Image 1 (cartoon, helix red, strand yellow):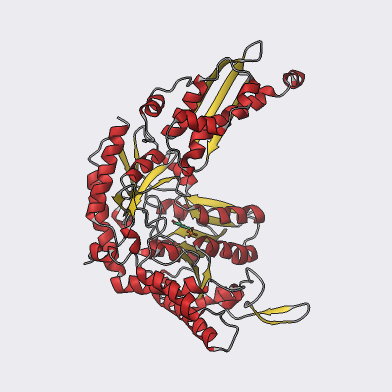
Image 2: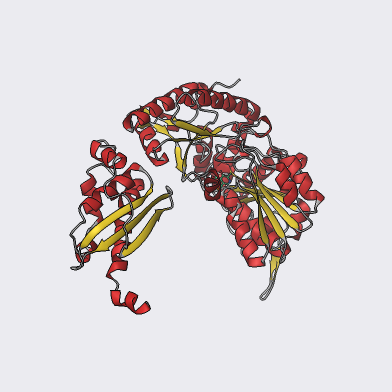
Length: 132
Length: 408
Ligand SMILES: Cc1ncc(COP(=O)(O)O)c(C=O)c1O
């Protein structure tokens, strides 16, 4: 099986949900120091605390960029709780390509960034209000 | 002239296949492959000579001690040190540099002193000096490059001052292949009474080094980049400096006498080699030096240069490919070529090359400040050594075409 499958290349060349979010509820950045890859996640929640909009930006290898693009496609409408439960192996399965140990961090960079953003969004928002 | 096909036969790893292709190894700047003679030496030592050194009077220990100490003399000769007392064995070039920072550096660097490095430095010749500067409230100054990726000597001269206490400079960049004019840099530093350390990790594998002619105060390198085993580093230092430096680690072997509450240090170089050293690998490193001497560093360098020229010709045919290498003849690269491809991350390049059995390096090459300076997140790199052939470059070019096709 080829690591550069059509789907991976398609998402790399035409990333979905790439960009930034106005008035984002939470923003998080993850780095992969080995490659210099960087993914920034911005998300906005709706009134019922579900993902209304989520976007990524940054640069990196085909695997990290495609994985982020594919992951984000599945997240709109999800609750923070549901996202927190996403497992690494589900990402690997979704990519459906052979991922060597050296490339695992690339594949999971998007998920790590999403989880970081979700964690920030889940922090009692009253703390943010209080600080205002 | 050197026949790489004949040489290749002496490196058993080339019998290996990678993804159903014969191995094409273009990452010798990371670590070189090892000839059978070096591997045999390791096996032979453990089979026939294994004993601790400097400690016992029985036959095996005497043999091991003499083999180990012979390599010290051999290493001294290889870089033309005045005496084998000026050669310390460490774990790698990184440890050699850290040893200077922790001993000479801690003793001599004072607040407001300045240390000069270049933007080319590998993290191993940068981070130890950053840390020392922080600890001592000293200042780190960084020499930039010219537009052709040469060391900017004019700027270096401006950075030098009475405050300069140390100049730490690479002998050859592991990214751009730049070979700074060491003699001049060292002479200028000495003019200000500054000490100099050369990171020789890349250069020593294919250039003749004469530390007396260079007049550097310290010179650090690793066995594993020059056909020897991993786990052996070398620190050359001028005898008068070694004598004044405090020990780095304390314990067995580095002492002359120990009483209940005090100890006296051994003579140099043993003062700096605490504990049982890497005996087997040091002895095998001696075989690597033999191999290099037999083949001739000059021949190896000429060979590398031809390969590099050919690779530059072939790779520059592709407009999507941008090449990064030192071009000025005085400082030009001889065996290292970094490159990037528009819209393709270096890790993807290396991964596709690997499917063709072509092993290349990708990433920041332990030179993050240099990557920032070049305004790239990472680079792909090919590097050559005595066992590489023109055919290796043709196969790399084939892999390059495949990469472009996949990402078309
Ligand atoms: C220029 C340069 N300096 C220092 C080092 C560090 O060598 P080692 O990892 O053996 O300590 C390297 C190795 O990559 C290098 O290329």
